Image (cartoon, rainbow, N blue to C red; front, side):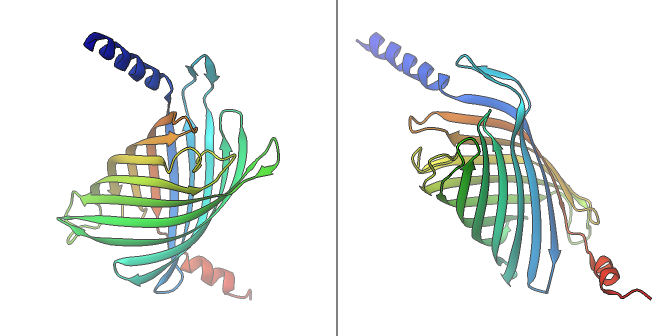
Length: 257
């Protein structure tokens, strides 16, 4: 009897493993932040999620492709040195291995940070509304989510005496699906805890030219109501800048002679 139970458990585990779609690729990102007033700032963020390896899973062909292109402008208000709130919009193009979607997103968030040892711990809670359009059917849908992001940064240099140096970074983001969407990749019909991203890597603060990070990211998505998963193993490359465009603004506002 025990042997039969063991065999059944092994078969169940094998079956569950077979339902996991696993892909490998890259996640390049760029972020520019700038001040508008002493408390108000803007940010422009762009990224691309690339599946870089052809895969055959469950006798299905999944060619290498650009899975997602993401563009996000946002405004942020500093409530205090450690607390910030923000509003943003994102336009997203999905290629779900031949299923094309265009998506509009709007969101509101609060960010809080505090020291932890010699590093810094940040918490971000975001409420997000998504409006995906499936291109083939021209069908709109609607979804709402809460996203909780926690990240820790540990400088490997003395920030009191140096403006440049390396640092370590780790982060986790949980996606909690509240409602929808009928035709979106993330949906409450699949799971309440529908997606999770975890990452860790090393960065370098260059000073004038911003921060450059190279890290590993694992994205776990519940892709259907049967609780099958899609796993993305990604090399994440991030460049974050805070260029000052005061000289450009002066040039644009100065009337010609």
